[in-house]
Amino acid sequence: MANKIKRSGAKWDVFLYHVILFVCIHLLFVQIFGLVPLSELGSVDYKEYIKDNFLNHGVNIYKNSMANTISAIWKTILIIHLILEIIETIFPKKIKKGKKELVAEEISDEKKEGRAGRAWVYLIIAGLLEIMWASA
Image (tube, rainbow, N blue to C red):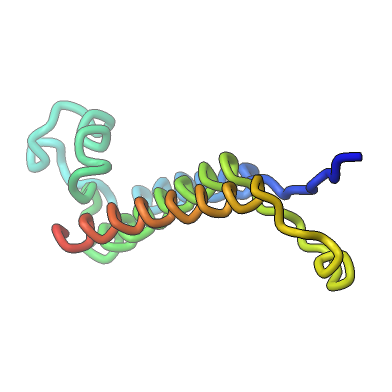
């Protein structure tokens, strides 16, 4: 009989709540601080400006610099959260077992490959984030 490995998957519902909170707080920022006029941004529409500058530059659309800083940091955290959820979907974690079960069970080649694949994904993402950090 083949051993079935129980795995815990990504928590996309938590990510959805994170996105909803992100949007709600930004709508609150609009009400509290107000938006920079489009003429100063050099764009025709706020949606186009945000779409063009979301990943590349900071989306500095609020009249308050602290709100713009919070928005930029939170945007980075949201992107990292998305990347982690994608990794958890591709390489789900194994649910931990008791010590007795772990001692009795040998590590198979399939488990080793899954761990190695996850490690390579983390290494590539760390390299990309390091490049982004240095260029920022």
